[in-house]
Length: 253
Image 1: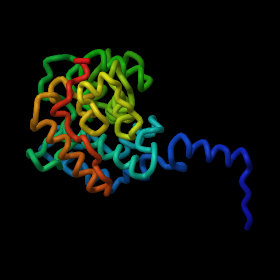
Image 2 (image 1 turned 180 degrees about the vertical axis):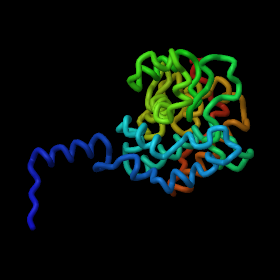
Image 3 (image 1 turned 30 degrees about the horizontal axis):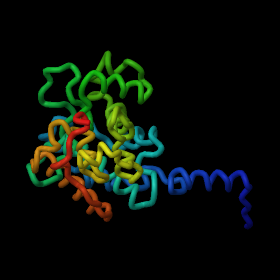
Image 4 (image 1 turned 135 degrees about the vertical axis):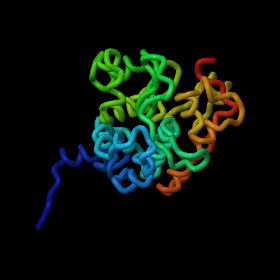
């Protein structure tokens, strides 16, 4: 049997390759159900308040709303993004013993719930402004401002808010996505603040005001530990500049 490819179809394939670095790869080709279960095996432990919430199906559904997430660049770049995303979010939701790096996705809600817009979901989305931006970003308008608990009760929305945050540049911060795939180029202000490409500046984007520029600390070590574990599982290098111990946070200019 002979097959022919029309010029239009061939052009589409070339365009797809140029913008994604791959041909028809989606996030599920890297984050298989088996890998998801091995990375996040503790999440359904009876001790976890979030037991049963974070499902593979919810993750895939949410991720498919962001076509560039985990699909940009070569195979190594795509796997590093997956490792970085789950490394950061596993720290945010960690319920395991310190130093084990296997207790991610145990929590859905922040323990301190004194503010209406307390941390929820994989990225622990906080502050009214982030709920408002995330709602617009994922296409639900003011729903998350009016009902922030949707981030803790709807697993697809929960994952979508985390991936939205990951993919979106805000103020003087680049997106986590652009950093991990190597697209971000630090400005002179970034370089003077010791903010250089690498996993460490992602920590700065997410929680730099609390964790970065303060020397060695357990929170940053935890984020690095999860990332290294997942890079090992995916058989990819971690790259350099993993910490933010000597970086000024973005609010400092």
